[in-house]
Length: 274
Image (spheres, rainbow, N blue to C red):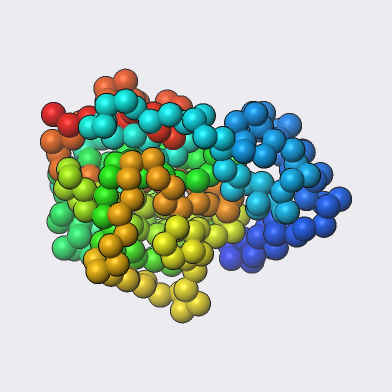
């Protein structure tokens, strides 16, 4: 069914509604959403629905300082988001696990860039799904200097478990924003993957990332001196999706207790160096 739906039309409609600032509409949408998704608004910087200008303003709400503490050990890699670990492991022979009995191409995920794929081959990946009720800002897993950002147009399939189990190469098909960083552990990629009713993706350095050309767009930031520390905000989703983290250095190990299906919070320790 998703293959025949008009993805862009659905997204444009959802985004239009989510941006409305009519008090009667946005307050109803926000209150209903809080109840249905059991959201703890005590964590939010602003607890009351009336504070938010629109549903999107609420959906991208910031949290109070301290509710997502970082690990005390500065060498630990932290989770960039709140969500559920979809898959986690090592990249083998240019393939990443999408779901049980489903792999997909690292090169395809990286928009066909073979040199970039070569950098991350035999490295590590972690795929984290953000449900609608999760906190939707994306943060740095470790300190890093921004090198490059690549926008990749694509489909907007849902990224829930049912779809990841059934659509081959899902993450390499959907619209995405790839951010490449130099870190003390080697190169790192943080990939924000769009999905059904994801109105837009934003980064803190470029704002909304949605080129009108709908073509693969790459921009170098090597001379911009954009340095972000672990835990710093780097982007956000206006409505749901998935984040994939890649590390080129296999000397990093994911913590053993993190398995597919486990919940994780932004800032929680995800990996460590050997």
